Image 1 (cartoon, rainbow, N blue to C red):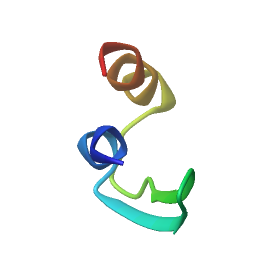
Image 2: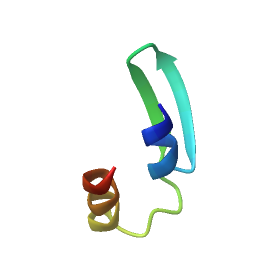
Image 3: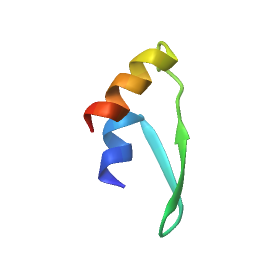
Image 4: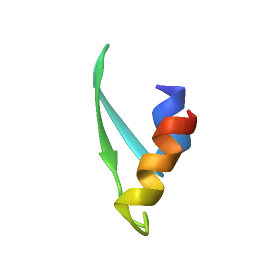
Length: 39
């Protein structure tokens, strides 16, 4: 889950292998894609 916390400002853990991300404040999906690839 640490990797998700680096990508999104808020992470709600749903289960051991699932989480919801609050993407508020993410400027564009392409910047999110770049963050995911580098993580």
